[in-house]
Amino acid sequence: MPEISVIVPVYNCEKYLEKCINSILSQTFDDLELILINDGSSDNSGKICDEFKEKDSRVKIVHQKNMGVSVARNVGLDVSEGKYIGFIDGDDYIESDMYEIGRAHV
Image 1 (cartoon, rainbow, N blue to C red):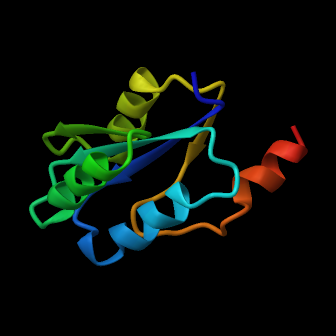
Image 2: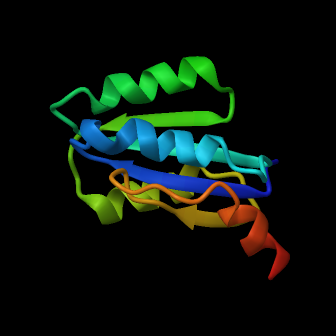
């Protein structure tokens, strides 16, 4: 069981998605799982998610029809296994030590 589950709702954000995913997977604290919820993207976002799943066993993907960001986050919660939950938007990225520093304050 990972300590942290990071949930990323993904919808048509192919321009930003690789930077987002890389920023999560390269965290200095690596006891985490990354859950990508492809919410019916019509661009290459779903393909990008699949490529990262092939590269890193910490990545989980759910492909679903478009139901909105709130539903996507809730689906992520349903499949998460972590003790703690983090949410990142698919067009954002985080600093490499975000979860290590955050964990120190829990």
